[in-house]
Image (cartoon, rainbow, N blue to C red):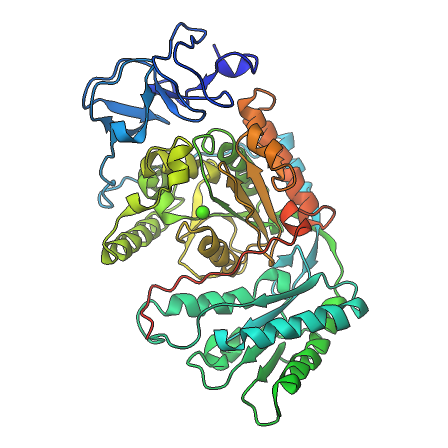
Length: 530
Ligand code: CA
């Protein structure tokens, strides 16, 4: 019998796979010792919500399976009905990256009504000259170095108050502030990652191909290194580059206010060009959705991530682009990823990115087990293997058609499900997905985080109804209804897709946009600082 069909007051548990020997407790607040489930299983101790209960007696050294994957071995005997927490589990070693077998990706039936509905679905977006589409119309201020950040912030505030009222079709001004640009080993291996990230951030589809750049003058990351001439978008009207450059050390600036004035003045032609843009219907294949999770719990892999995965499958069928990332959170699922690689080349690229990251972590004296947080464990996730199995579900079931290195941008016309290799850190992952060309972000959370970005709308999906109710003005979609038995995973995926279309079109705003919750851009710099 399906435990999800039981009423909310009855003891409920969710077993992800028939071969699993643990299930997680669904009820708010957990379940007390002596609680008897419908099939007679009785708890021999209290089990918190989201934590695992043993379904059978587990001897010492028994494989504990969730998602039909071994998430650990027991270090002492665990009776049926006992709480299986992280202190009872020894984590398995990471899967080897050699001799992985590629599979045959599933063939999707593309002839049904759903397929034609997906292909005909549109959203209202801003077309760019390079073929990308924006979901917002923003003036971005590119910065070569952190030294100019204060000037940029003050100029942005003046642009907002003095100029934006005259340009009603521009949605806002964002400062692409960062800590890089000088005091770094700019030619070291690895330095290309932050540099290309900054370059590609400026080219995000939401900025309309307009580059307004502030440089200090003496910094290592000079403007033409940040954006070589051939990377600057060309204005379709004039054929000249859409670059406005202000250098603060330029002798024409007599003191501070003239610097700020120069930025504000230079912003005007950029705002004029942005203000001329209008939304128009475009196919949803123009959506570039970055998915990630943060503050995960044991429900992440049961409710929110499967809903996002179902939505990802719909988007990929529609011809859109979905990026999943967070290398340490998918490393333990490498076998499943390789089996879904569309070509042997994609499989090799996945392995190469994971091997690079393994070596990066090793240089720092850690491994993937450094990923899980105290909150993850409190939420029922015993270790990174269990977290990874729940994380990977966000990618859905489509073949993986491409891989991006950290900071890389999607190639023109590159579509489908993409593994964009990034750290799992919420801010670094979000920054790298922005650089890749994301125009919509979906973020799942179980413990709860008020995450948001200034550059793209962020749709937050909560894993539990209790969180969605408590954070009613922060969580955009409550996937906890799946565990409550109110909604199927497929229905939640469809609901999320509709929400994406409304948000991308500017018809509705996410809670993070409403409150202007904007986390910092954070660069991934594996190279030395000086
Ligand atoms: Ca994350």
